[in-house]
Length: 60
Image (cartoon, rainbow, N blue to C red; front, side, top):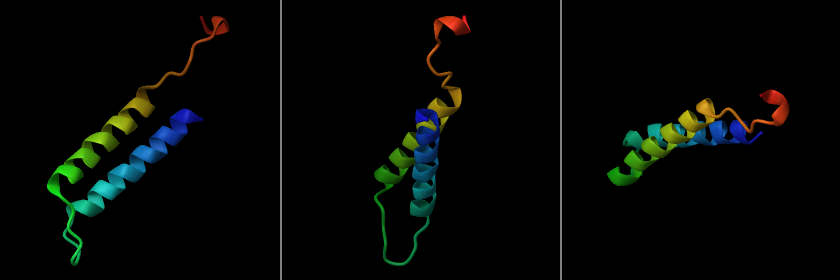
């Protein structure tokens, strides 16, 4: 469940970063925030993708 939530949150952050990369009307995002959104979203998706979950004794 937490893997799904992390993946979903990462995708949402990446979409926010994508939309903030464009200059739409009078809305201007600081460059540092857009860069942090790209990095944070990528890390979130990567961690969710690589997460194996907890191992129990029956898994080994």
